[in-house]
Image (cartoon, rainbow, N blue to C red; front, side, top):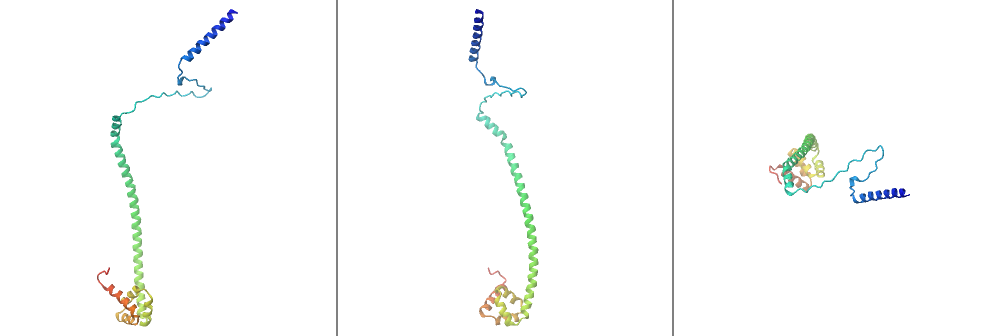
Length: 187
């Protein structure tokens, strides 16, 4: 029985010694017990964080001055690229505007030719009408158009038509024809 007690006593003493060692030894985080499943990848080694000292002002200024030229060059190249893109867009719009302008000029020429033909036809119609009927019809159209027709008519025929018109309408048309005959712009 002594032998049994002494074994038990020795075992308790050993356990107490181990417990004392474990409680006294500091446990580091990377030495913590990790459970790994069979067939799984080995856990990655934990990284140790190293505290770096904060850069002082001279290092920051040196860094900024070293990259200032490169940053300025990059900014200029980006601005130049953007300007090229804007110029290309403007050129494209200018081309479209030139095409539209050419189209409108062509349309305007056709319109002027048509109006000249129509105006000549209208003048011939009023030249063939009786003066009293022509005066009545010209009183109904706009004064500018009536004055233009009268100016294209033979002066004797225009005089007879004006004689047949109302006094106020004839005075208005005469004023328009007189201002149109001036060489200087009245405005």
